[in-house]
Length: 157
Image 1 (cartoon, one colour):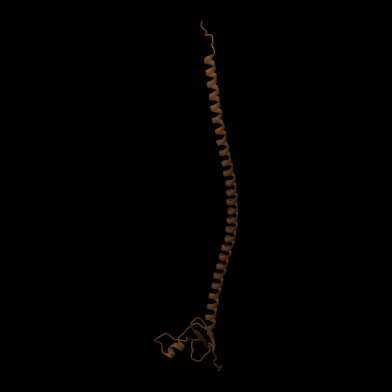
Image 2 (cartoon, rainbow, N blue to C red; image 1 turned 180 degrees about the vertical axis):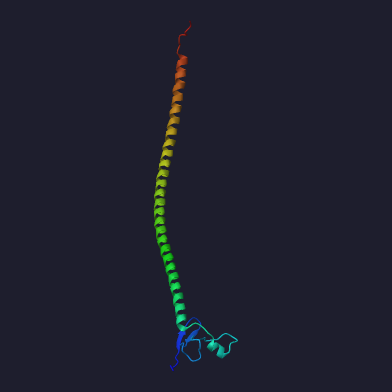
């Protein structure tokens, strides 16, 4: 007869006591799991002898769950890495756009200054043209006056 022993596994909100399969109270060769707080309505005997997963099966189940969590963690890490890469690309695009906007602003200011200069020149040319027009009117007026004073032969057929 083998001496009985206990292995205690601490899980989430409960601990499981694993009892070897050759324990005297287990006829089917299955171990029993006793939970820290048995469900309400079960007597101590029912709680201690109800069939459950073996300790090794529970460890395997938790290991599988851990693998799933690690896979999920890797997916999140990959998504975070992709988001970080996209963020760097967007920052580079933003810097380029800001540089282009700055260049366009300087070009706009240069063109505006040129337009202002052209408008001033046009205003000056308009004033000169008005003065020339007035001088021309005076010359034409003097020419008409001189022509009226000169006797011109009439041309009759």
